[in-house]
Length: 387
Image (tube, rainbow, N blue to C red; front, top):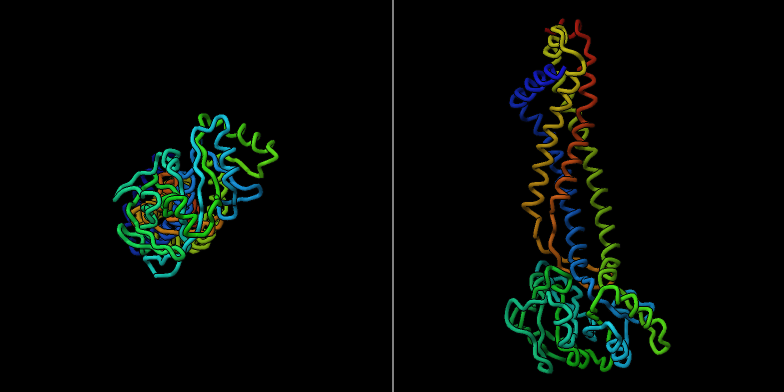
């Protein structure tokens, strides 16, 4: 039986060249499904990765009690000093999280961009921050640095440019990278100068803590909860950004599967039509093989394998195009938790490409199964009379 399967399958595949136009319908249709699916899921994966890279197990974030994001949080200097002095805190940075409007490079539409006022300790707390052009800002001189993603997506933040926040003009003196994290979508400046520019003297949006051991974060949170002077919430930075990424990532993923499923219906019908036509064109050939003693199962298997081979070709084409076009492409989208734009890179990884191939195989199996069964059930005598 295996020998029969090999012989019939080889014959079918050799004949594909004579049916190149019709066979390409399957390849192109499945390539479209896989390409769209992989590209959309790569968008969700890239956004999630940008936020998750922002989290470090050795960092904690402190927000006002009941706040879910820095934009809606607020605390004072007294609270900052109390938390910073707690046991297990290696370094602390009070930070101001504000929003400004900047035009996008792509279409000139205005977008919300984060302006973060930080203390010197912020750089020690986040060792991944690396100045790649220019220099670090100097406190009190109206200077800022811009993340790589912000520079790529928004106008007015190039090195040497001047930005106006409220009635204050700031000069961009440096560009930084942050290991591909969401911090690369932000503009950073001196905390005291930012508080003055936004008229929020003595006000902090949040604190960042660097701890000696990740297990310390839970103990710090317990001490904060037990202190009647504090109405704060302490959480791991990893948990904080995971929660921010979850909603939009789920939305993008669901949308990707929905669009791919709709396209998959069309691809399956295209595969069915193509394989039915292929079987119809080889009716006499299949009947002759059956008359010579070839079984029905080898015929079914050979037709199914042909459909799967074409489907794999389509899957590889779609996944390859998605990787070539989208992988590493920098885009930005609104982070609903912070109401600010996050620049991130599409991430077409091996896992998504494998998922695309699995979809391709499933579509090929569905599109080839029924024509294969029909080929095996062809009445031998009636088929031979057509010769």
